[in-house]
Length: 270
Ligand code: DGL
Image (tube, rainbow, N blue to C red):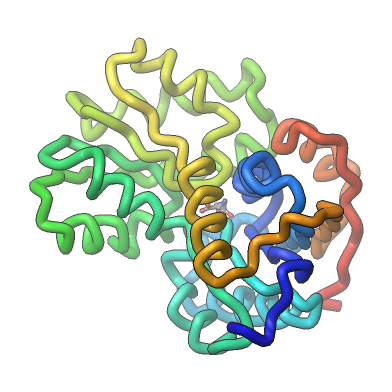
């Protein structure tokens, strides 16, 4: 990776604006980094799509981020991380570092949650791929994992944000018997941290809610440091692209990202 320079941007992509929860954490941990974000709003939600469709989208987006000279491409979507990480990594080869949002969480569980009862909520694609369960079982740390697909939750969060209307949707999913008697619950969709306070409240703080955003941001920092690609000189420029621009997405970004940002339309599919 030595042909890269620290000033090259970090590329981040998601099915929509959910990955902004991760982008937000990355900006906090790495304020000097230049960032290019791509939200594939034209194809949202990914959680319902087949693995091969998500793979095709992801490879094309990774190609676009490469054209933007990204030194690191982060798949900030669990559904795409589950379905397309290996393929994107193969496609990009040594042209950039490729990371997903799943592996940093697996390492966190390995180090801090041995012999615990872990629950996981995510899209149908993420849960049905079984990728978390396989990786957790491979750790051999006595971690029990139970997963529940909460498929409409990401779209409901896009629609209602953290507002009152989301309470009924959460109640519907979180009352599932699978989620009883857990030590911790992994939010395995990058949209879910938006409602993490409500989730913690629903369980009356009886279990820990694992929001992967910070863990992923720290892993990105460590990877860049290892490759001598940390940008310490600034200026921390950010571009936010979406494949389908609507006012509601533009408004929605305010819930996902502290800073005021401007979404630009990038006609990747036109
Ligand atoms: N943010 C995506 C994830 O982390 C899910 C949303 C979707 O279904 O597109 O899985």
